Image (tube, rainbow, N blue to C red):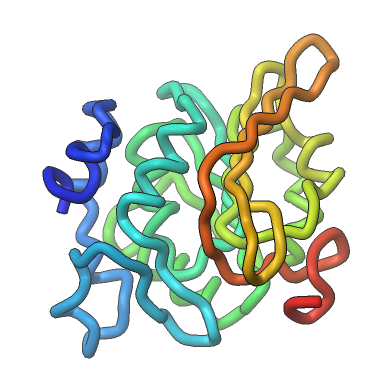
Length: 207
């Protein structure tokens, strides 16, 4: 998976590649899908949600340009796989998941597997998580109609926010940087994610 799907597509950061090798992706999906755990695509995890394609997990992580002492906010924890990858790279990961059952399962799974620097909260991810702000990196694993203001407000100086923006059929991955009081937006690759539901996202699903 790492050699063919990730390194061969240009992700050369050894810290990310090592994390992708170390985290057992099959333990973050339903047992009946184990044979597909390391294939090149997303997979359902229940509650209408998915675990992202391995390359997209690596690519979004790479876009954050993380350092060991960074603190990261992850929106849309899902199964906890992306959280586990991030936990190998940074000091602390704060996760938000709006579906209580997924949040509970992810927190238990991460704890049982030894990822002790991740905390998962149940809540509206479009509001971020103010008590632990600001964050050096914010990763959003669902598509928003626009960039939520609360996430911009919780981004530290020189912090990076990676988020898919668009509708059901047309989404672009964007990277936002805060520097010197200004916001800089890069529009990158076309992607396809489930909707980001919440006050600053889609109201109950796609518009």
